[in-house]
Amino acid sequence: MNKPFKQHLIDPEVCIRCYTCEMTCPEQAIEHDDNNVVVNADLCNFCMDCIPVCPTGSIDEWRVVKDAHSLEEQYSWDELPPQEDIAGPAGDADLDALDEAMAALLADAHQGAGGKAKAPATAAKPTINLHNLGKPVEAVVQGNYRLTDSDGNVDVRHIILDFQGHPMPVLEGQSVGIIPPGTDAEGKPRLPRLYSISSPRDGERSGYNNVSLTVKREEHGVCSNFVCDLEKGDTVKITGPFGATFLLPDDPEARIMMICTGTGSAPMRAFTMRRQRTVGAKNGGMTMYFGARSPKDLPYHGPLKKVPESLLKQHLVFSRVEGEPKEYVQDRMLTDQPAIADMLKDPKCYIYICGLRGMEEGVNSAFSTIASDMGTDWLSLRDTMREEGRYHVETY
Ligand code: NAP
Image 1 (cartoon, helix red, strand yellow):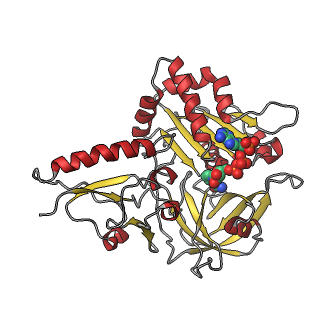
Image 2 (cartoon, rainbow, N blue to C red):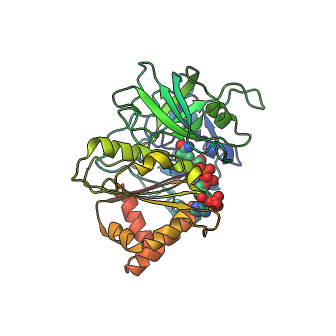
Image 3 (cartoon, rainbow, N blue to C red):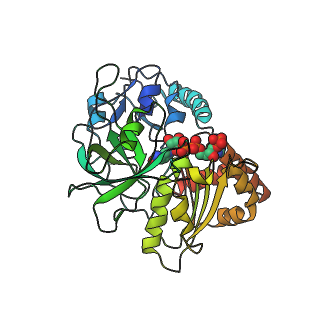
């Protein structure tokens, strides 16, 4: 009889197919087909290098099995199988030892604010992976607008895509993949790059089958330059939608706290527009801490000024304004400590963090200080909120 062991798996419902884990794994144990990203149990050595780089936590799945799920099985899954009931004491001691070793490795990998998330209990059920790598949907570019000052170095674009009647049911907080044309250095078709949808579920224009994306031109970036150079009428191959946890609760009284940097504001725009279109005066409110180098580098700076404070309290913070001290989102969180403490006490408070990976540490530390002054341990509060679908991180 085979001894039970822990198999490393990827949750196909939560995975956004960014392929970062596959590019990170030193053992080449992670691979993909048109449908899913999977782990080869024969090659995975539990080094955990893939855990911290995953923006969604879909990588952090384990099942105790006697026989490993094959690659073919994993490729066919739409969702993970439940934990089987592994009967009998065979191998239990080994499993416990492995559990301890894995727990220590995972604890290291989990440092920072990321980790496995749950969707809010009231969130709408998302559609996932409707258009996969093998059968992407073609969208037509309806518009490409520069969001940042044309004299600055930062070129961020608002791209509007129309799906021409093809189904593309999205929820705020989900992402889509854009497949850049051409082949990579090995002559293989390029993999899609993931972008968060910055429009609400009923369309960039309400009732239209279109979505918007917020894309920053990166020096030497294959996909970002392709996207930023798109013109009206061009067509693009799209995969998705992806993401099943970074979603809004369907509760107008929920209090939404959004912390973002740069183009990490994309899902926050979608959340704000969704609320603007659906909730009335009786709402739990939204507060945003949004960091950019300067006002001219802050995506949506102009439109944000028109959003009323009754809907969205805005803290726009800047790190490189001449003559002013450098300020990061975590600095403003500490300045706004009483308001954050009030939100943390509220069981209807939902936290969303999106943007640069580097912000996680500072944001986590600001939360720790605020929670500690409230007499609360931040890590246990964070884990409770995560378990309740009220704490969400998507950083790259
Ligand atoms: P950016 O312009 O490089 O930075 C935005 C602001 O964050 C700047 O003021 C920057 O300050 C500050 N910052 C730098 N390090 C920080 C830290 N450790 N803590 C707090 N603030 C910090 O941002 P970006 O290039 O737009 O990057 C956005 C990130 O969001 C990317 O990693 C992207 O992959 C990710 N993202 C994008 C999307 C999308 O749909 N496009 C969706 C989700 C996530 P200084 O530069 O002055 O240090």
